[in-house]
Length: 46
Ligand SMILES: [Zn+2]
Image 1 (cartoon, rainbow, N blue to C red):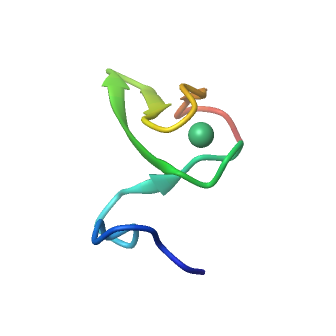
Image 2 (cartoon, helix red, strand yellow):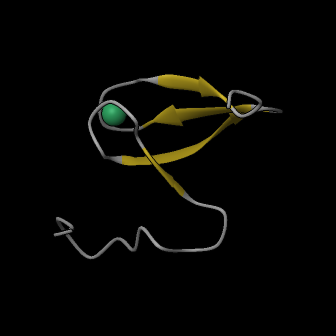
C-alpha cells in the first residue's frame, strides 16, 4: 500500500483509518482519531 509523504504507517501500535486509510493518532484515553478525515474510533470496538 502506497504511503504519501514520508510518514510510516507500520509503527508500533499505529492504526490506519477505517474510513480513508489515513494515519490515526491517539485522541483520548481509548479513542483514535484520523488526522485526514476526522474519523474517530473507540479502541474497544471489535
Ligand atoms: Zn480517515
